[in-house]
Image 1 (spheres, one colour):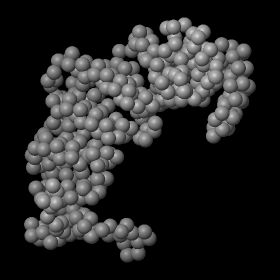
Image 2 (cartoon, helix red, strand yellow):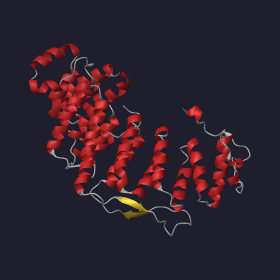
Image 3 (cartoon, helix red, strand yellow):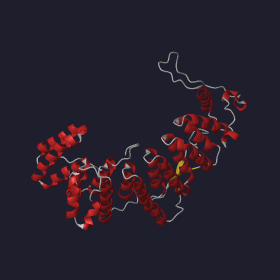
Image 4 (cartoon, one colour):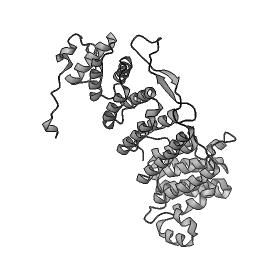
Length: 402
């Protein structure tokens, strides 16, 4: 029980004997600051001593104590993080211990990109053998915040930096002689691969299974859909084939049947239908949607028509129909069909115009957008501009986005 082992009372650095030889440097806000920040005494004391050691270029064990205290109070202080990293290298401190310490701090600072950057620098020093365990750590962090942008970027960085076909880039533990004395910055070197190629392939295959698990927990998680597309189609070990695309189309159709108004899955579907290696600039921004009209049209029908539709649908296609209780018709399907039918010619353009007119009342928040889409049909004739949905842009992870 914590009350049986209470923490000792906090002592300001100005009252610590080991810091008596340092003259603190207070923050200079000028003579008449317009909006001074009201730091508390504890933070002002610690940062004043930090400025002093920064000017003196001191790299010592007590600097690690000082920087840790400031980071606990303000995990976004980039300069403190960077100075701590330089101190660790200068003292040849065990970086595994620092990694464990950071694992304790990060759960309360998951939105601090400075903390994640510090972890990245440590991994560049520790190398590939430490990276596999980091994938597990990132999964734990995502269990706390499944849409945290920083965690997803870190996980993608781990995959590309340590498990790509080319040797991983790490950093030398020796300071660059060209750097100022004591300011040890990492010198990139090539790390020898410590695992065979098949082991790295296994890591990427497991990453697909990881996205399966994440989507089972939340099929609307846009960040997971983005990561899945990156792993399968854009990453350094991606091997896109027609068979894979078709398999993912079936996977996505099933996901849409579970949650028809899930914009993330519809965006993923557009990405699958967009040429990965376009033969012309125009084909890069024109996904071919019309082949999936038979799948999408049921999602544009009202709920009371679904039972009759199910009776008329072939058994093999029924799993892809909207589930009972779905709110239909859904805006995402209406937009998808409107863009798809345009590919069919002039008759499709007329149908698209009717669909956009209906969307103005069904989705009034974007009424002006749907009006613009309808006007585009009229001005462009039989070849209206289709909304560009490049995979990387349309599926980019956004912190907090469903």
